[in-house]
Length: 172
Image 1 (cartoon, rainbow, N blue to C red):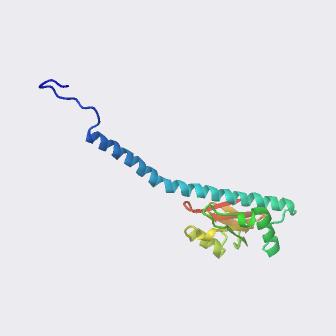
Image 2 (tube, one colour):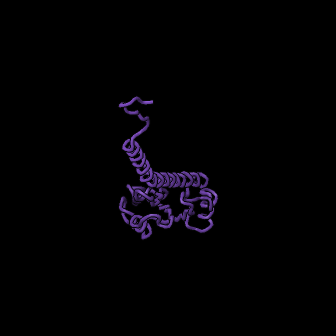
Image 3 (cartoon, rainbow, N blue to C red):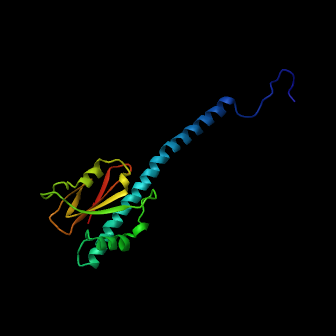
């Protein structure tokens, strides 16, 4: 009990201290919620790059099992490659959509010039998701985000539009 003339000392936090702690916690939560969608998109793009790498690896497997030949545009041959090497309907984008894999030959006329196929042009100009189309371009190699003509008829490039960073291209 306090004596006459003495102030009673109260234990606890002041309203200013409590408000400051709540404001700091709010800023931390805000930063996490702002960064989280970007991190998720980056993770999905990493999985998409891995799918392109898997496609390149499976084309190499296909070539080693078929005397160096690439999958051709013939329905049975390409369907065999898609179902038996890529996994068919189980070959899915991280968003849950099935990858649509297209096989096309580079239409450039001179070496190291960009493949001018209309669907490849739309891939680089489109915004994500670009209908989950993955392109295998024969007689091509990668030059950054695009496929260019190669002198090797057994070379190929695989391209896919990413969510955050343009087109990903990988070749053998």
